[in-house]
Image (cartoon, rainbow, N blue to C red):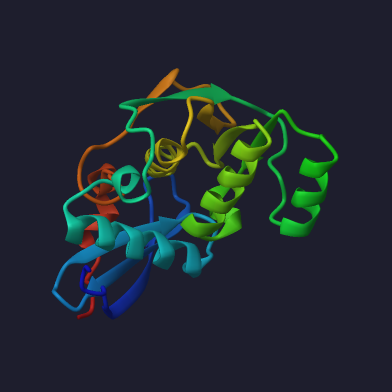
Length: 197
């Protein structure tokens, strides 16, 4: 049995990204000193903390997110432009609509749903009903696309993809680095954050 993982410290910091938008970046420090990072562009600090905790867990185990969650281990995820609305984060309404057969593909904004666990729950239900999953990167930011690709790779089956609201390359690479695999260096302000211990 593996030893439990303990979070020793969490810190959330606001930063201005290159586009001028504000982002929240979170760092979770595990008791063994391993740090994980997360972010959100929608100002929900809980999303950034959840992402950082999963990143820290993956780093502590030395595996990417998809390996932690038994994903399909794909190296690339299809990206599509999609202007259709994503599904509002209301589990009761979503479950009712699924049972009524209203969807062929569930368009989920993982930043609105708030946690990896919720995305996994929705993916499991979608799989049971033979529905595809499309994870929305709402601002088409590289961090969002990379995180959505990592999440999409955790979903079993080949019909998971990333959708953006602007034109984008047809595939996103799924990182094999431990954790969530976001390239934090793509935003210069990230390296300037002075994290508290």
